[in-house]
Image (cartoon, rainbow, N blue to C red; front, side, top):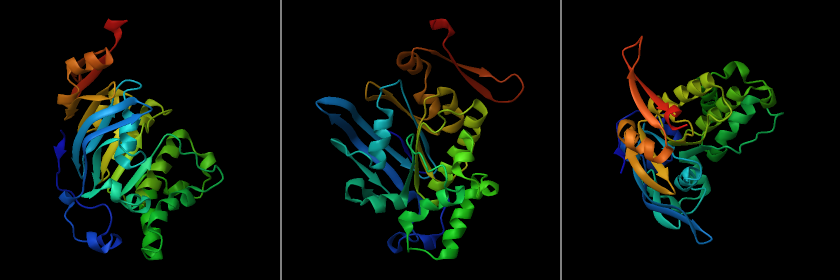
Length: 283
């Protein structure tokens, strides 16, 4: 089980929160799942997942194709209803929260988001404020959108049409829209798909600097060590390892689950370790 709840400052001003949540300490804001599972048409897709995350944790969900990664993310954010177990968000049962209540504490960047190519970047990012409609002052709403654009390096592109952006810029716009929601928890489903290697690193570096809990499905193992604080490894719908990166992604786990070798080598020019996933010996 993953159980880390470090102190950190809130991303959003206290006066933007519902009255009953103002003044809460950060360690009260958690995501937890107990015995989570999902079965459809007599086929068990996912089973026996338990985890607890605190604010500032970054959980990477990894595993081979068909292991249940996206299913787990969808169960954790409320897009799917579990057939076993339960999920809690910010101390409340997920099943008791309305879609609008969930949207006030979570934001999801999925693989299927296809914004109208004619809409401006600013208008697209402003959509993140919809769950908070009529809850804040207009100046405050504008400030949150401006902050999201600044954090993602898109302020200079705010008037551009979404259809004119590169793949990396569109991904950053999706992150900006999610940040405009002022979430406590950010869910990302393979956010680096279709990006070049540098754009992948830049996007995850951006996310890692945010003061929110992050749950991300990642396909590329090379990205995990520098991004995640915690990992859950799935195989055939079951968690086979979880915990800090060095523990969950052990040599034996990587070889058993992915069929490749893991090497940890000293960097030739810097005082740090390189994590290498080697497939050559298995070809």
